[in-house]
Image 1 (cartoon, rainbow, N blue to C red):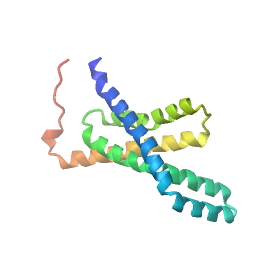
Image 2 (cartoon, helix red, strand yellow):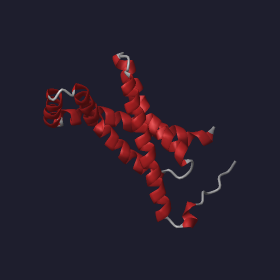
Image 3 (cartoon, rainbow, N blue to C red):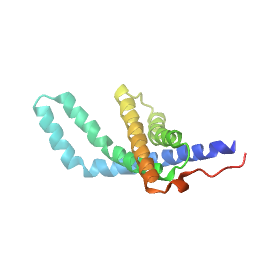
Image 4 (cartoon, one colour):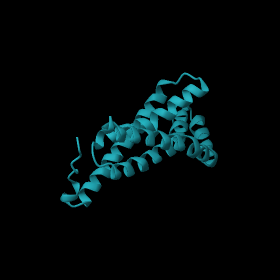
Length: 153
C-alpha cells in the first residue's frame, strides 16, 4: 500500500493547484482582462464570425489555467524522480478533472462537449511540459545522480 502513496500525493497536489488556478486566477483574469476581451469579441461578432467570437471568449478565459498548467507541469517534471509519466498524468488529472467535477457538482450544470475538450487539452499541456521539465532535469544532472535508490520491499 505504501508504494501508491506518492501517486496519491501527486494527484492531490494537482487537485489543490488546479482548484487554486481555477478559482483565484480565473477571477483575477476575468476582471483584469475584460478591457481586452470585449473589444475583440465585439469586433469578431461585427464581422459576422459569431462562432469565432465565442471561441475567442473560451480561449481567453482558459488562458490563465493553461499558463498555470505549463508552470505546474514544468515544476512537477523537475521534481518527480520515478514513474514520471504516470505521476505527471495523475497531476494533470487532478489539476483538470477535480475542479471541473467540483464545479459540475456544486453548480449542477450539464457540461458541453467542448468543456471536456478544453480540460483534456489542459491535461495534455501539463503532461507535455512536465516531460519537458523532466528531460531538462535529466540532462542537467550527472548520470550517477539519476539512478534510483534501492527501496526496501
